[in-house]
Length: 249
Ligand code: G
Ligand code: G
Ligand code: MN
Ligand code: NA
Image (cartoon, rainbow, N blue to C red; front, side, top):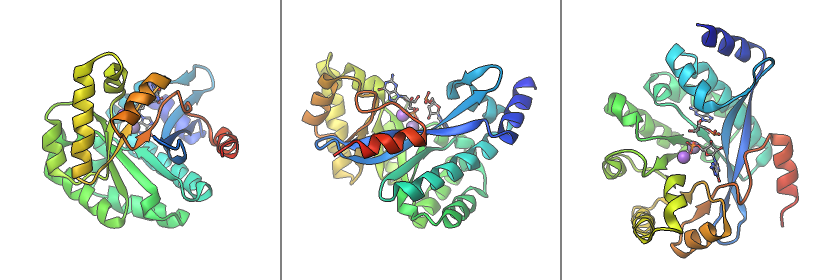
């Protein structure tokens, strides 16, 4: 209850703010887009991690309100980021909401943002709830022109079944895989195969959590399309992102 109250107050008092982490072309390192990651700065408790407050918001139902806020802030950012896409993480519970697609449409239109610039990141766990309803909504979002990415790929179960269930635009390879790339030949073989398979299926690939030049080198060698990680940049507020973008060739 106290967490719910704190979340409610935080929403009312504007304590939530998106940060943005660049996604760049693996070869040229040119910025292609950003992933929006929600941050909560509590006046007393300080910063609370999304690993804590997202599950809490899911438990008390405030994830819908938080999700709308994320989409609104992301679309505001997309307006000024022009050709860069903005990826927003979506909870499985949001996709269970029959009003979700129209709410995305309304927010896009309100901000005057081209749907192709909005990417929604979903995880495999979404299929555990009510797969037919979730798939229906993913298809409706696709039809709107929004891009859909499968996040944390490689961490769940039956990953390959999900690839057949829905034509994702993008596959985001989980950082636990990326971490083992430089150490283990078997991990490299698996990710290499995932990237090739994604290409055949017409999906782009993003390597997440790239932290070192060595990891970047392997990611390039296996021809992953995009890179995201601390090596390139950490998530940052919009004001810092402006400076970061301005300082690049
Ligand atoms: O940013 P890290 O930044 O610590 O994020 C931790 C987790 O929280 C990630 O799994 C990320 O997908 C999730 N997350 C961050 N922001 C949001 C958000 O706006 N909505 C949802 N549903 N999850 C988010
Ligand atoms: O679950 P999802 O992939 O949406 O969450 C992305 C998470 O990964 C966020 O918590 C983000 O802050 C974190 N992250 C991004 N880049 C790196 C990185 O290079 N290393 C680590 N350890 N975490 C990262
Ligand atoms: Mn994500
Ligand atoms: Na991820």
